Length: 175
Length: 156
Image (tube, rainbow over all chains, first blue to last red; front, top):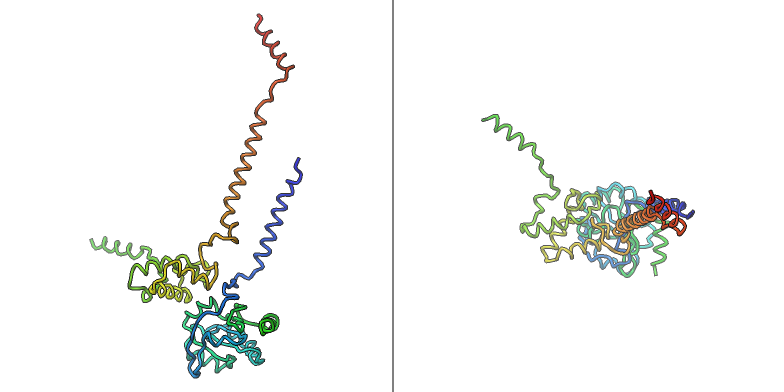
């Protein structure tokens, strides 16, 4: 009688296994950003000491750019610094920095020590970070020529991230 | 007398005091606005500690979000406007209570669906049991035999 009913537990198990497989293979540290394909937030940040140009929304228009949120107190930022510097040296697109919740002096020292890959840097006390939806540095955004955020990377950028994700995206949005 | 006073003091010292993440220097002078800040903070997730609310959390980001909430409330925003702004930056995940929408219907409707399935199952089971318990009606043959037996009994 109703043999197929015996298959029901197996079917339920298969469904749950599939759900867990998809759900658990996602990185829980990376949250989807609602800002993708939205215009970059309005902001105007002052420069770090030793520079006279800060960073504002207007700087992001006119071509694809990378916006990297970093801080001298952030250990993974040190980790991504090499790959980011190598990328900046290619001079494909400008790399803008948002120095997040940092002491200006500490940031300037950090850049002197490691080298400065950034075209322009704005110093943020935390409020611009919220506008960008930043919850953990380092975070990197790809902004297209119209000033729209097209991609967000959470965590340190590796050379592989740049080669496999960032460069193809620049080619795609580069027109 | 002095012993009692000492005991009382000791008890007072042991009384649990809630630890507040909100720093004294960040509180607004207007108690109504401050109360609204606290209410909003309780609804928002701190994205650094994930399972704490912005109101509870001691993280720097939570502190900054509280500062933003205070600034917006002071500027005249409603609670809903403030929450909508923060949601537009961080996504639905920032809300501690997930909204009811297309991708969360299973989350909200799941318990009701399971309850309905359970009620349906129990109903089916009970109906089947009742059908089993009810004896089938007598056939003509059986009725005749029964009448005969009764007649036999009636005669001494």
